[in-house]
Structures are given as C-alpha cells and as structure tokens.
Length: 392
Length: 202
Image (cartoon, rainbow over all chains, first blue to last red; front, side):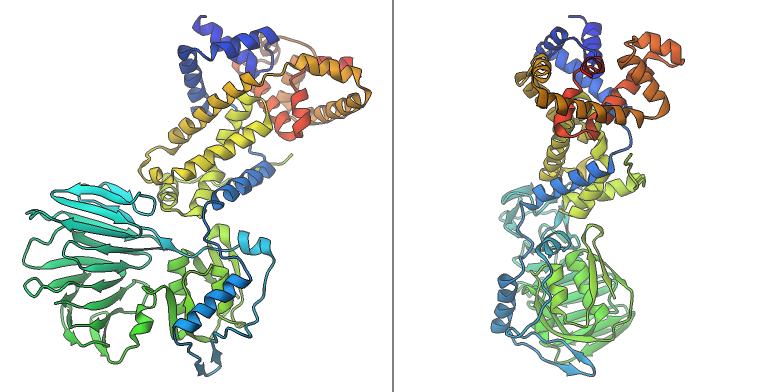
C-alpha cells in the first residue's frame, strides 16, 4: 500500500466519500505501524495548521466545561456540604477554644452554635459557585533549579543532594543529614495562594509556611550559623544550638534566635512585619534598630521604625498554624486579606463596611460557609470561576 | 448559529501562568486552559470519528487526563504540542474501537425504508439537515451542495469555484463537522448516508 494511497483513502474517509469496501481496507491498514505513523504525521500537520477548526459552538463549550469540572471535582472532597456538617465544625471550635464575644461600637461577630441562623442556599449553588479552602501545597525548588510539586509528589525520598536525602511524608518535608557534607546547597520551598506546608530543616528545626509564602534555606548548616530567608508568613520552632545562632532574614530585617518558637508575618500587603515570640528569646534587628523579645512580645517593624508590643495574644497570631483564623477588632479589609491568601481569591469592594470582627473560625470551611459565618452585615457574591468575591 | 462570544486570545505569559497555576492545583486556571483549547481537540476528533457525541466524550477525556497529570504542566514548554499528543493517542484508540464496533449502515437504510415510523423520523432528520445546510456560509454551502446534491467531483468544483482542491476538501469537512455538531445524537448517524439517498426517500 503506497503512501499516496493511504493518504487518499484517509481523505475520502473524512470527506464522506469513501466506499464501504475502501473503508474496511482503510481500517485494516490502521493496524500497520507504518500507516499509523503516517496517520500521526497527518494529524500533527492538521493540528498545527488548525485545518478543520471553526468557531467553537458556545453551547457545546459550556457542556464540555461542565462535564470536565464535574469529573475532576469528583476526586476531591474539599467542598463541605451544607447542613449538619457545617454546624459540627462550629461546635468543634467552640468546644476546643474560647469563643470570643466582643461588642465594640456597632460591631458584633458572634460564634454561637445553638441559634445560628444561616441562609441555606440551594445545593446547586453551594457546590458550583463556592470556593474550597486551601490545602497542603507547595513547590520545592532544588539548588539545580529543578522543581518538585509537593502536593502530588508521592511520599518518600524526593531527591538526594550531596549526602542529604529530601524526604516527603504527607504534608511535611524533611532533610536527613546523616553524613557530614561540606557544601551548602540552597533550596526554596514556596506555597501558592491557597497552600500551606511544613518542613523540618537539617538541624531539626521545624517551619510551618502559610499561604503565598516562601522559605529559602540550605540543605545543611555547615557554617557557624544557620540562616534562612522568608517571604510571607512562617512559624518557626528552632532546635537548640547555642554554637550556631539561627537567623531568619526578611529583606533587611534579621531575627536572631538561640532556640525558640516564634512567628514572623511579613506579607507585603500588610502594614508592618510582625515577629511574635512564643517561647525562648530572640533578637530582632534591622539597619537602624534592634530589640530583644521575651515570650508574649511582638516586634512590629514598619518601614524602618521598630516597636515592641507586649502582651500580644499569641493564640491569634498562631491561629493559622493551628487550623483556624482568629480576628480581634479586625476591619473587613484585614479579614479579607487573610481570606484571599488562603482561598486564592480577589476581592472587590462595592460598598464600605465599617464593621469590625472578632472571633475564631475554621480554616477548613469552604469560602461560602466562612463568609456566612462572618454575620448578617456581610453581603457578598462569589464568582467561583473567576475566583472573585464581591462585597456589597 | 451559535458562536463563541469570548474571543480573547491569551498571551504566552498568560498561558505559562495558567500552566504553572494548574500544576499547583488551581482549577480556575485549568478552566481557562480548557476554554482556550477544547475546540482544537474537538474539531480534530469530530473530523475523524464522524460523531459529535464521541468527539465530545473524547475531548472531555483528554482534559480530565491533562488534569490528572497536572504536575507535568509546570515544566511543559509548548502546551499545544503536549495537548496534541494526549489527544492523538485518545483519537487513535477511539478509531480502533470504531473499527471493532463497525455496524454497516447499509442495514440501517433498509430498516428505515421498511419501517414506516422510522421513515418519519428519517424525514424529520432530513429536514433538519436541509435547514442546517442553509445556514452554512455562502461559498461552503455552494461547494457542499455541488458535491452532495449535484454529485460533482472535487476537481470539478475547484475549477467551477476558482478555489484549490484542498480548499474544496476543507469546506466539505467543515460542513460535515458543522452538521454533526448541530444535529442530535440519532440523526448524526444518518449523515453517513449521502444526501442523494435521502432524496430518493422523499
């Protein structure tokens, strides 16, 4: 069967001019490897030239989109169904942590489990036009530039750099430094909006990264100090090592640590960089200032001005790491900034809302459930496909 | 005639961003990719499978597969090439399956002629086909009618219309795809019978 003959048969087939017998011949020919190769070449030609593409049928486009999204959403169980489950997560929070009822001028944010009236929209709405919460996702960039996506990577050893193994276990990454290696290779772990991750550094220090954050760190601490660079927000539990001080750098701010637990919040859309100490002792310094913090204190760096806040509510600062949001007299914009990072959404304000909000709410709720939880003063519309929330 | 209203052509950077975001699990970015490329997959599928329903299923399967292997997307340089490979493999498998399930349409014609109620259904489909042909753009309509109603060869049509032979073929395939996409499931099969046969059954 010559090349031209196969091509001709194929052409007759697609233009609907092939005889019944020729059609059988054509299909029989497809079993042959050379002919299949030829078909593949023809398909590629036509694909690159967009040979038979016309305006897409809009109705068909919608149908296909709906079907595909249905099929892939069947995989996750991120969306929390309305009704009993939702109520249950509020009950859990109220049992586990203090429910804060704060009545400020004109602002009430209540988390009552018994007589909560929440608008229950119809099922279709909550499944189709809602945004699921964030989850454990991050990208690890190794020293050689290669990237590993951490949520979908299988558990186990991800890479080996020098004598050091990078191991993934669930939503945690750890570095096991069993050999004494001499070179320091830098990795970067970054979480997208809607992601969070936890990692254990070579010295045993633990780091929790919030959404839209990154940490640059060496796979082994071989020098006379341990230095990492942070963007966004991270909570650190630093392993004790008096001989090797631990430094967290955020631009030109440096947090020096001897062995301790602290949180650094350095999102660029927040007004200041806040370093909050839970246990131990840290020194926070920048070009012009330095302060030493005791537990419960917070260094607030705005521009080059450093202030110390004493008696900070560390629960609120640490809420994200423990799986919930915590607000105290927060205005709506502050609340939405945090939500937008975790749900990976943009927010449009169509009207002003002077309410302030206080209380705790579960980070694992879907966006709609969470916004409902903010109370009757918040009127919103979610456009899930554009990842947009409009506040009215 | 329904047409796509969203004619935004994305830049390379946008596509790159969608790919990276999708690899990290962002469904919204994936949806943008889907909207941008579904028709490429569908057009080739309907051309070779000759069934709108099968082409639609194939398109869906291809994108579900792309999502399933989304972690690869961050490293992909040319999405069109990658999409082609996934689509081509599905298409060839589907063609093989078609070969197995090949019911000859000759039997269908006889069945239709002999059963009065099916004949009515046949006539309705025929009318629908005629209506759709009228909706084709001017040149394409003429080319298609010359081929199917007048029985002219492609060379003759090319000469008469002053276009290339490839141009004629192009019109025919696009017309067939249009008809298949806009007919219901059942009537699609009837297209495999040339329109001459339909005229005989008036």
